[in-house]
Length: 243
Length: 250
Image 1: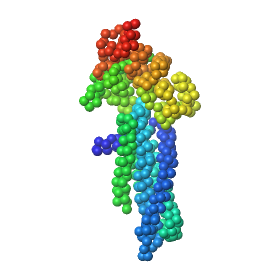
Image 2: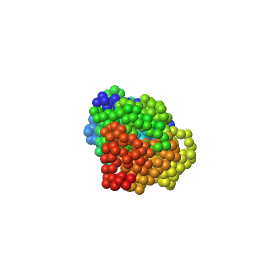
Image 3: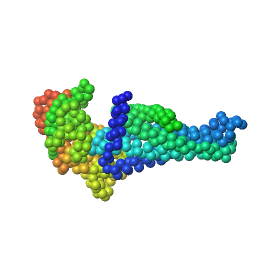
Image 4: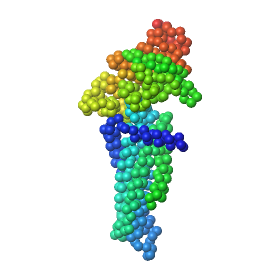
């Protein structure tokens, strides 16, 4: 375990060495942003709308009582969407979507000697391959999380309109009621941390792939599994510290 | 010129290279041959720095490459071109982008200058007009030629080739060998080729090193191979009936 942690930290250090030519790295960052951001928009949109809708319907069901204000469903689903559903569920989905892609892409480059080719040319392979992915993850995953929050809350509104369990006006009042800005901060910290975990952990497993196609698949699986575990662990730590 | 001095490489308890001393001269096709597991690819990887030797040194024109740090090696690496066994083209880039990749990173050439250079390299390997194709759209022989085009894009001083004929038909193999030999002469590169293809050895082997059990077992030219009495080399080179018959006629 300590051996792996040491190799992971050394790889990160190599990844952030001064680039050979910034313009080439910039083009890679842009390409990664498109791949990670635009490529994941569809799945994030779908899961966010449904999770927001389901959360609202369930809260409305659980808190349906004459002693509870009807606006409470909006407040509770807002807080759970911003604090947990959007950053964490999105990150777990993105670990599968982005993380497996990163690990298998870098792993394939390793077993087909493309990384050797980079090193022969004098290119810092971790820097060229990994740093654009991490920087892109640090940027795009928070943006995807913001989109997820907005769509999740919209999904809740749609559920109110369709199911009529809660009046849409009550839901809107609930969304605006007793809002604490700290939850947005927690959401942001989580999104940035999860972005770093997904891209760096999966890059690590991809970079140290050896063997052939079978091992590339194993690296992708390990990358996703370890990312998910670290996401859940980081989720607990961030929530405990910041709330 | 490239020199190796007492190169030893071990993986765990397995000593793959057992003290290799040799010189590779410029303008010559230096071939490393040997059976599977004899250590020829490991020797090549030690020379280019993909493996660090357990002991011993590699010198590029008198500079000790083994002692250098990553950054110190960069000026030498810029003078290296390498063709890998599976070509190792970057899948996400077109043929042209593959060839321009080292130019983008290490030169201040303008876009049009880089395109001109890529076109020149493609013409040199007889692949004019294939600029916009992706590696997945190329045949094995075409991939090798694009690999060569990428390797020569920076006008290398040292050219390394790992199994250039693997997976190719005999005619394409000969074309690739001839192309490598032409480039070696044209650019006066120090060319090191790892192969087990006897056609390459007899065709372009100006200087041949035979590895056996991790040791340099024999060294000479392709013409000398036919007349050597080295038992292990004879067993390796003249294993096939065709080569035996060819030897009898020599």
